[in-house]
Length: 353
Ligand code: HEC
Ligand code: HEC
Ligand code: HEC
Ligand code: HEC
Ligand code: HEC
Ligand code: HEC
Image 1 (tube, rainbow, N blue to C red):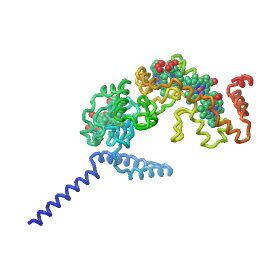
Image 2 (image 1 turned 90 degrees about the horizontal axis):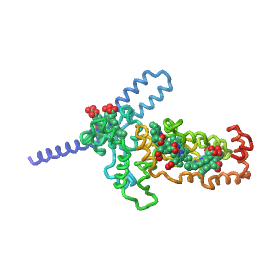
Image 3 (image 1 turned 135 degrees about the vertical axis):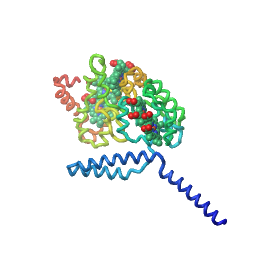
Image 4 (image 1 turned 30 degrees about the vertical axis):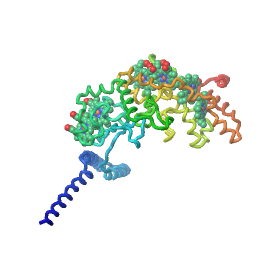
C-alpha cells in the first residue's frame, strides 16, 4: 500500500514538473511568434515557387533556412535612462510588447499616423500605456488606452517627453564616475536606451525648411557646408588609409559614429549644429512645431561652432604632408584651384577665399 502511494506521489510530482518544464519551454507568447514565422514561411515558399531566376531562388532558400531556425525568444526594448542595464537600475522600464507584436511591417502599417516616431528606441507604452514588462496578454494590456485620440495625445506635448526623461533619470541615479554620466538633458544626444540618439538626415529637415520662410536654411545651402566633394579630392584623403580618413569625419560629416565608422550625411548639415533630430522633428512632423522647438532647444550648445572651428583643426594634415617630405602648404594651391574650377571664380578670388 505504502509503495503504491509513493508511486502515485512521485508520478504526480513528475507530471507537475513536466507541466512546469513545458511552460518554461513553451510559454504562451511563443505561439504568436511561431504563428508569425509560419505565416512568413508560407509566403516565402510561395515566392520561391513563383521565382524564375536561379539567383532569386537561392536568396529565398537562404531566407527560408534562417526562418526555419528561428527559435521563440523574448524580444524587448530597454529604456535604461542614464543608468546601466547591468546594474538593474532602470526599474520597470522595459517594453516587451514586441515579443507578441512581432510583425514589424504590420506595425509600421498600422502606425502610419505616427510613423516618424522612433519606436525602436522609445518603445510602446509611452503611447499605449499598459504593462511593458508583462509577457501575458491580459496583464500586458492592463490599463492600456483604447482610443486612438488618447494614444496620439500621449506624445503630442514636449512635456510628456520631459516627464519620461525625468522618470528615467530618477530610476537610474548617478553612476560613481561623474565623467561617464550624461546629465538629464543629454537624452537628446544619448537616446533613452543609452545609445546615441538618431540623426534623421537633412533631407527630412529640408522638406519643410525651404524657401522664403526659411532664410537660414537657404543661406546654409549656399555655403560650402554642403560640400564633402573637396574633402574627397584632397590628396591626403585619397592617399591616407581608412584610419587617417576617420579623423576627417568628425568635422566634415554629420552624425558620425566612431563606433561603427558610419555617418548620416556628408558635409555639415542641419543636425551637426542642431543635434540629432529623431524626436524634435517628429513633433514638427505632426504639426506641433512649437513642442519640437522646445526639445530642439534643450542642451543646445552655445559654442557649437568650436567643436570644429578650433585653431589647429588640420594638424594631422600638416603632419601627413611633412611625413612624406612634401611641403605642408602645397595643398593650398591645389585647394584654391579646385575652388576656382568648381565655383567658376577668378584665381585671385580663389586665393582670397
Ligand atoms: C502575450 C502576447 C502579447 C503581449 C505581451 C502584448 N500583446 Fe497586444 N495583443 C496581443 C494579441 C494576440 C492581440 C490581438 C487581440 C485581438 O485581435 O483581439 C493584441 C492586441 C493589441 C492591440 C489592439 C487592441 C485592439 O483593440 O485592437 C494593441 C493596441 C496592443 N495589443 C498593444 C500592446 C502593447 C502596447 C503591449 C505591451 C505593453 C502588448 N500589446 C503586449 C498579444 C500581446
Ligand atoms: C507615438 C505613439 C505610439 C507608439 C510609440 C506606439 N503606438 Fe501603437 N498605436 C498608436 C496609435 C495612435 C494607434 C492607432 C492607429 C490608428 O487607429 O490608426 C496605434 C495602434 C496600435 C495597434 C492596433 C493596430 C490595429 O491595426 O488595430 C497595435 C497592435 C499597436 N499599436 C501596437 C504597438 C506596439 C507593439 C508598439 C511598440 C513597438 C506601439 N504600438 C507603439 C500609437 C503608438
Ligand atoms: C514637418 C515639417 C518640419 C520638419 C520635417 C522639420 N521642421 Fe523644424 N520646424 C518646423 C516648423 C513649422 C517650425 C517653427 C516655425 C519656424 O521657425 O520656421 C520649426 C522650427 C525649427 C527650429 C527653430 C527652433 C527654435 O529655437 O525656435 C529649428 C532649429 C528646426 N526647426 C530645425 C529642424 C531640423 C534640424 C529638422 C530636421 C532634423 C527639422 N527642423 C525638421 C517644421 C519642420
Ligand atoms: C577639428 C575639425 C576638422 C577636422 C578633424 C578636419 N577638418 Fe577639414 N576643415 C575644417 C574646417 C573648420 C574647415 C573650414 C575652414 C578651413 O578651411 O580651415 C575645413 C576645411 C577643409 C578643406 C577645404 C574644403 C573647402 O571646401 O573649403 C579640406 C579639403 C579639408 N578640410 C580636408 C580635411 C581632411 C582631408 C581631413 C582629415 C584628414 C580634415 N579636413 C579634418 C575642420 C576639420
Ligand atoms: C553651422 C551650424 C548650423 C547649421 C549647419 C544649420 N543651422 Fe540652423 N541655426 C544655427 C544657429 C547657431 C541658429 C541660431 C540659434 C539660436 O538663435 O538660438 C540656428 C537657427 C535655426 C532656426 C531658427 C530660425 C531661423 O531661421 O533663424 C531654424 C528653423 C534652423 N536653424 C533650421 C536649420 C535647418 C533646417 C538646417 C539645415 C538645412 C540648419 N538650420 C543648419 C546653426 C546651424
Ligand atoms: C560639424 C563641424 C562644424 C560645425 C559645428 C560648424 N562648422 Fe563651420 N565649417 C565646417 C567645415 C568642415 C567647413 C568647410 C566646409 C566644407 O568645405 O566642407 C566650415 C565652413 C564654415 C564657413 C565658411 C563657409 C563658406 O561658404 O565659405 C563659415 C563662415 C563657418 N563654417 C561658420 C560656422 C559657424 C558660425 C558655426 C556655428 C554656428 C559653424 N561654422 C559650425 C565645420 C563646422
